[in-house]
Structures are given as C-alpha cells and as structure tokens.
Length: 382
Ligand SMILES: [Fe+2]
Image (cartoon, rainbow, N blue to C red; front, side):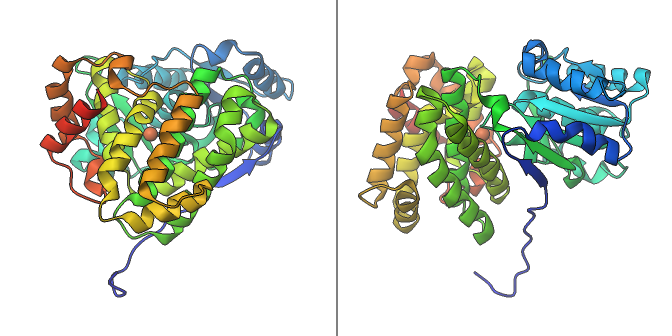
C-alpha cells in the first residue's frame, strides 16, 4: 500500500434497523414535509398483507399514495419509463422502493429519470454516463423485503434493454437512499428457496468484497463480520426461520452491499452470464459457482482465506476448509453442486465464457481471470 496515495471510502447511508422499523415510515415522511410518495414495488409484493398494511398506514394519516408495480422480474428500461409517467401524471413529492433487488433498482432508476430526461442509457456508468447525473433527485427511501442483494444501501441500478437484454448500470452517489427502513419482519414469509438463494448472494458479496484486490480495510472489516453473521444464521433462516436469524441475515446482506463498493470478483462474473443467457436467479447462480470461484482464488491468497475461516467459525483455518464449508452449506440449504442441475448444458459453455470475460465484476478479482480460465471453471462446475 502506497501511504501517499489518497483513497476514498463511502459508508454514509442512514439505516433504521430492527423488527418493526417500517412503522416509523409515516412519521419520517411527515417530519420531512413529504405527503405524496410514489411507492414502487413488484406485482407479487403489491398483493402481500404487509404491503397493504404499509399503504393503509400512510393513507390513514391523510397522505396521498400512488403505487407503481407494473414491472418485470428482471428490470427493463420500459419499466422505468412507465413508472416515471406515473410520477409525471400524479404530482408526487418522494419515491419509496419496497422489495427485493429488482423493485429497488426500478425505484432508483425512476429517481434518476425524474430530473434526467435524456435516453436512460446515456447515464450508463460503463460508458462514463455518470457525469451527466448533475441535477437534484427526489427524496428516495428504500425498504428491503429480501436479505440478499443489499440494493437498499446501494447507489446503482441494473436495468436491461427491452430488446437486446443487455444490462446497463446507472450509477451515482445521488441515487443512494436518504434513509433505509430495514425491518426483518418483512422477510419472515420468504420461501426457503428464495431465502437460500438470496442469502448465498449476500455471502458471495461479503466473500468477494473481502478478497477483492482494492485497498479498503473498512470494507474488509464489514465483510468479515457479515460472513460471521451469515454463518450463524443462514441455515436457520432457511430451515427454521425466526426473528433472530432473519435479523442477522438482513444485516449481513446490507453489510455485503456496503463492502462490495470495494469490488467483486470471479464468482459474480461466472454468475451474471447465467442470468442473461438462461434467466437463472442471480443468487442461485452465485451459490453454485461460489466453491469453484473460491478454489480458483486460494493460491497466493491463503492468508485471506485463513481470516475468512476464522470469521466463519471453522475448526480448521485454510482455503480448503472454507470451500468445504460453502459446499456443505449449499447442500444443507438445498442448493445443487453442479451447473447441469440448474439447466446449464455443454453447448452453453463457450457463450458463457465469452460473456463472463466481458463482465464488469472480475477486474477486481485478486488475480486475473482469462476467457480460458472462465471456460475451465464452467467445465469443472458442469
Ligand atoms: Fe450479487
């Protein structure tokens, strides 16, 4: 580490965390002079009792609430445009995203679009579009309902093109929520398979952030504690959920997302192509690839793996032990060991390897990953 190189750390989001935290929402809006929120969610959550309760709570205090839930499972540009139309036509003063990663991404992209009306993808961070995010944005609040992506504390939204399905990244520190209401009770009803897949996404964030090559000891500390919480709670959250396990997982998912401002790595680059090519759930794709990606990274980074093993509470502190732990955890929470068990076939491997090489996550992996490496990793996992 060059001590004269100036680096930047950002850990600024206000998080109101705890069982029942969402009950604070109406008072928060009132104290900020907000009366007319646009609530963005997905069509499934819009039907759930807790969602209706949140809306009733706001309306009973005389607030005007407009709900936008006409969205796709994987967010596309037209979702964002439709939601912005609702904003335009209904005189709103704030935006509340309620849901998992997809709903929060759409809410965040609408927050951007309200005062930035060029083509949405002009703001794509990967082509330097973040410099055009210059105007103010509406007051933005997030309320997570899964413990996985940690999008509630993020500052970017992944939105795909409707036709080409190419994923674009909208990014700006302005897109961070002003406040997060993180209420574990909202995650109590998540089905086991979703809990397992999203939970493994959170574990992958913490592990990849800790291994990422950039210098960020603040994120390293957060990631290690995130792993410890997941080791204590993911199995319970899947198999016998209670307030304690749901609380730890919700915390750990936010910690993973805070930590991965440091960077991600080979596992996310292996996972992203599965979602774009085969529509695989993001968390599931990470979960299956995680042991193989970790094995790729052990050589030369043994000390990092020893520290991860300590956080996970393993009896043996080594890379091998960490990998064995992940394989065992996957097995216990019902996640398959092989890519072939989640629909990947030999004929997909070349396209997957091309897409993985082009992915944005692996440049921060602790060691370089070539197309050939990706091809071999897929082959091994098949
Ligand atoms: Fe992820």
